[in-house]
Length: 450
Ligand code: SF4
Ligand code: SF4
Image (cartoon, rainbow, N blue to C red; front, side):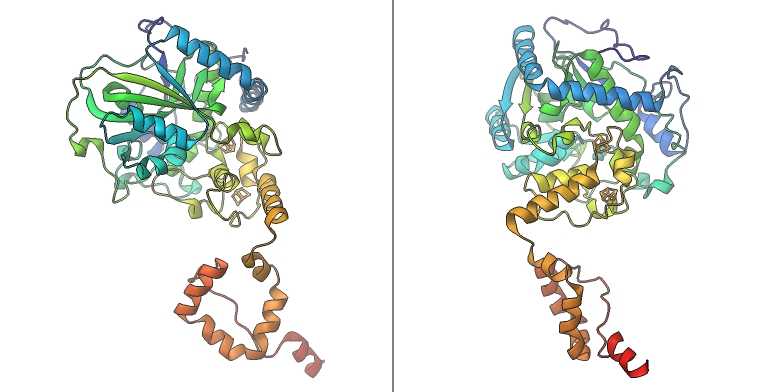
């Protein structure tokens, strides 16, 4: 599907195209030393745009929507094509289709061959979906992306701290770079598994695309004894050109959120370097897991627009409650918040203020606030309102119960034990300041003074 202004990256330089699965990495433009390019942005610099002038950000949004809709409408065909291509062209690559996390983890455990350490990148499919179950299966999991930062680099706390990126002239910042193809031959191979969520894959020829800001993916491709590429169904697109474009769009629309998400290592996060992993003398292996995990169900209902998501995290940047999503192990977004609830992995979707900021930022125009309402309605329709909603949805009832006993009720509300209990029952944070009950209501006051 041609997009004006974007060219398919050249294939020259890829070793053994007929037997090595091409793995391409796109990253911030390389006029600066690779490791310093994202840091450069952190320090306030903005790269010169190399975008053909005919490509505006609005055109880019239209084009990415077309690419995603085409992939969504042809999913079955593309999945079948991808599997056939991988099997026929790259027989040394082992391909597994997994219906859900459980099947994926069973497969990883089965091929782990005694390797206990797992390095992951920060893509949603591994950092959010697979990581908890990898840990539960007994693996020691290291998020190699987060380990590229130290505490000093946590300089951007909110979107108003961001460097001058607001004109979205980032199209040129993510100039396509080919960094690698296939797995490097065993040289510095270490005894660990790398489970890497891919950003896009071409059904037509199997080419894998990653977006990288620093060097974690490249390092893992270079040195992990076994590399497992996790491919969500929503990452499969028609051809290499579409895959390049989708990956690039993640960079263009997600750069600000990436900078917001840069944080120090959490206290417990291990670094692969600190682990001092022993060298491996075994042959390197490349596996591909094609993971559904609820994605195909999206296509049959009201939430099908979520399948269009490219995972750029732009919805996060102006969300006023993004700090309540914060998790030290990955970057949380409104889209993830919704997904977690949709797939039954969380019990609440109530902190959203329905302010619409995420919808305005989303390059695919996915109406997350509306979907949050929809999800809530479906939930209440199926299960009825929760106790929390029954209580908080009727403030007049609460007031009627509390005012006759105002002094006692206020004292109880100040008691830490009661507040802890209330937090468990109603979900109201024990540290929040609640309005006080007053014995004299406005009605009583009015009757006496009117
Ligand atoms: S609508 Fe909800 S999730 Fe979206 S930006 Fe506003 S508060 Fe955040
Ligand atoms: S929902 Fe969020 S992560 Fe998905 S495409 Fe829209 S902005 Fe990007």
